[in-house]
Length: 336
Image (tube, rainbow, N blue to C red):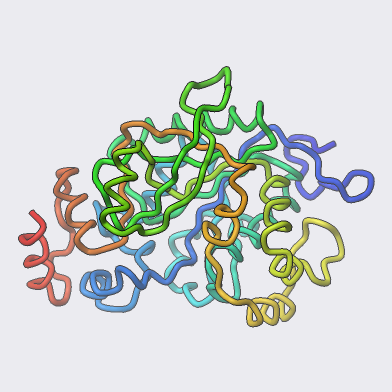
């Protein structure tokens, strides 16, 4: 079995992974930030990905994510999935992180590849722990409620290890730029009455569809998901077996990663993929939806939404002195 602190000892019998009682986190920090590039370029004066920018407050989005997660999952069990091209941005920010907790992808091939690659690292470190995946471009008005929901989701996974738990935010208006999750009834769970079955996903719906989803009580998809590492891997093998094979080739032991040139070649052959579209949308029977409640969640995907979040949160802009600051001021006035 895997003993506390005994990393790398995850092999038992015929390569099966051992359950681990502790929860791990993966912070998805490898995006290029193209949707927000006009704003981040104005703030930073360069093409700096949004997760490394100070948009809402004095911390970067990556630093805010680290701070938000710490009450729910130990920083010692938090991994950061980044890409090599962003090294000059993350090297200082993650300088205090143990090297084994930084998963460097050769290139950005989307969230599906990032999930697979980080799972390989986690299974080599801890066997089959509970794992949560967390984007960096989110904002929560009530962060402690969010942390409590993460802890609850981990407990639900302990009682329902066959399910991946998605965190759904209560929809406040018919947003057409978000992904939506349509629930299909409640799942029995002694820990909470807010656990729901998943019927289907709606990605960036048309306005009239978003209105209908709001009226039906559908939830916004935060892309925060928590489950056993083995459950993620089984779902991936079913939905994208070719990608799993490509990122598992020439591995000497189950759970270890590709190394060096093998990883570069494997990533070069990959077609970029979105985990929600490729995996979650075709695996609804293995999913459960946990309603977040009133946490004030926002996806910081557009300049208008960033300014709106700052206004709603009462945050002051740290953009003064940034190049093209007049454009930013005009944007703030138009949103307010």
